[in-house]
Figure 1 (tube, rainbow, N blue to C red):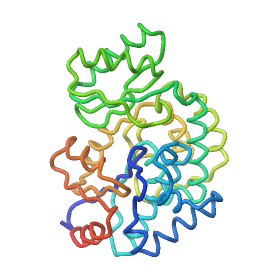
Figure 2 (spheres, one colour):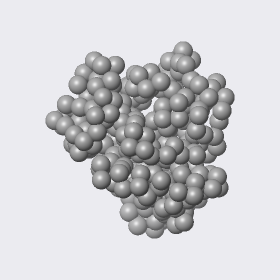
Figure 3 (tube, helix red, strand yellow):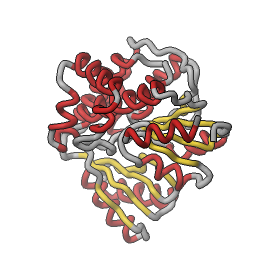
Length: 315
């Protein structure tokens, strides 16, 4: 498959679990070194948290974001060290966009670890714990979901909107808990096959995150971002950007804008990619990629044997 164009994608929140990357940490020194670097940057033992922490603690967004970014960067470094080729294009789902920018050479790893910890704290404090919610909606088209969310928002006087367009027939909604609950009921009546609350601690990618965006903008303004060595497709508009100042503005806008993941994958396919590698824990994005475009060959790297087999398959 070496003649085919390669894409890398990086997962966001929801892929975290206690014990993730255990085998990779044991097998690849560069994975251990990456976690040690992140731990030194943040002042706590991140690997101990991943191995021995409670899932509830790992799910708090201020913790989840730097941990997942570190997992993705560690696997990227292991991939390169084992002889894997650099991809032609990248994208990351929500938080994963920061992982992609690090791996594309646009953002320093230590800077990114500190940045996403702050991003998580800003997102969490924008809406108090318990007041916001998110839910995955399966089996309804985007138009129907948008219409129902508008109805629920009007009826409740609160915020609820479609925020992650993950694949055709799989959309995530978010907003105030009461409005999300109302929308879930209406969506089931409208024919949704499933409507499942998600284990997250804030209503990400809604207008409720604008205060977090304002605080993030202050931090991002002082950050050094370089032109990516590998194009990164952004969540907000499903296109790549070269200009560092534009990338900064997109990272801020992303926090309160829908994740256009279906369009991101379509842009990757349009670039000529036929192989897509998920660089991080789990296989959520691999499944979404196949639903968006069945021509894509998906690979994942969390387990060492998978990583080595993927290097062999794509070299």
